[in-house]
Image 1: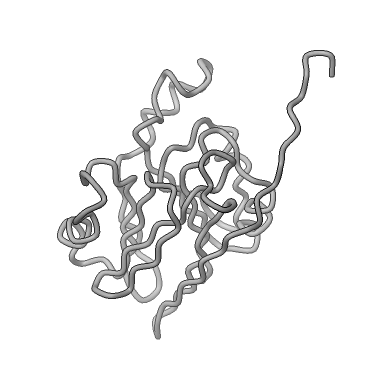
Image 2 (image 1 turned 90 degrees about the horizontal axis):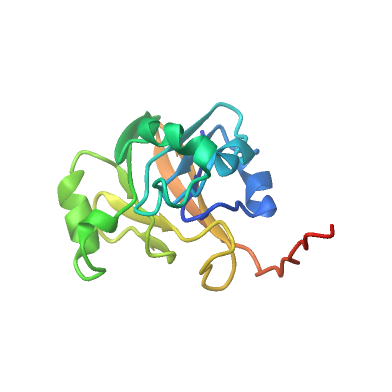
Length: 177
């Protein structure tokens, strides 16, 4: 099973990331979504799973979508072939120093823990569970270009493929257009 993992879109999903999501069975968003439009743009073959980030609130989502926030959990644990994938935004795990240890302690039964918040693409397989951050899949603070992680999982094992695309300049649309 292929699982697309993204985070920190802040209201915009890079279309190249959306194309990669379409090749996966499940898409996971680790928070700071920025609006339902992002979730609608994620079109995996089976299901979209998302958690709320620290900026997913009434001030950052369009007014007509605010009611959807109550359906976004702060964390979720998915049963996947070969193990569990825990997903949280990560902002509640304090500063970067020690964050991975705290995430491992919080989800000891998971095979991997996904978090967002930092906008940094990270694959930490030095301990168990693995700690994964897909970076930013939008256009805000992408740190070298929009990124994501593709998780391949089956009963025999898991593998992780970090993907970082080259930055792209987006033209602003004016009111006259």
